[in-house]
Image (cartoon, rainbow, N blue to C red; front, top):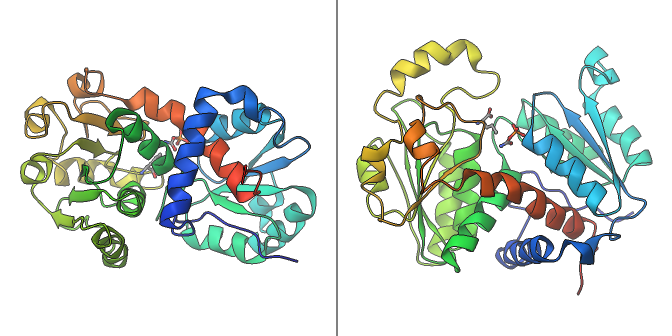
Length: 310
Ligand code: CP
Ligand code: NVA
């Protein structure tokens, strides 16, 4: 049995594979009919420990559009909810389906799925990474910028799963990334270090600070995410206080390039991490990003199953 290709952090893709995936995503968006039967007879199992709109619907619609089928498995509806182990679940599911996607709390859960699955496992968000979102973000930036090389993304807010995946994905695309978080909410040092190694190969930089205005200065893209992620609802009031001064509003956007774009993975909390004026303003590309989840993930599904033109 050959080892399946997984997608847990994005680091599974080489620089050239990620670029190839983005080229394929552009073609899928332009000519979806070309790919209509590519996954005929294939099934994707989707395990969700947390809520989702975009991930659930874009994967399900994407599989359907490729000629395949997707199964929604809420963690409380399958035996995981009654204590069946992750590894037994992976062993069983991979006897039935061709791919597994999972949205989990602990990143170790997707690693355990991957360790025992016979089929590719995709991380549909864990507490540490959200690599599928970044594929769509890169596709969206490439649509606006043409080449991604040498562009700079400024991320403002929590050093969370989104920040980690943007660091890795943007660096792998030859971009620079600047991150501003409040003190105590920094990104994991090992992930910053890995991004630095990827970026330096392109002569690009990774900078972290606690200063939103300095971070946004001259940026081509400004990104933020919720201050309290799924599972952190109890910390919401404390985080509102700790993140004061980190809202992406028009005054902060004014430090970026005049034609800079605003990105957000969604769902957004207008009035918290972003003002309504920026979120719904002319620089915002948030709904293109949401749409591109569909195209980028169709490319990912084809790549993991090696159903791509050589
Ligand atoms: N951005 C994102 O992953 O959205 P959902 O939580 O709705 O899937
Ligand atoms: N950081 C957010 C992303 C949601 C798509 C969360 O984990 O809830």
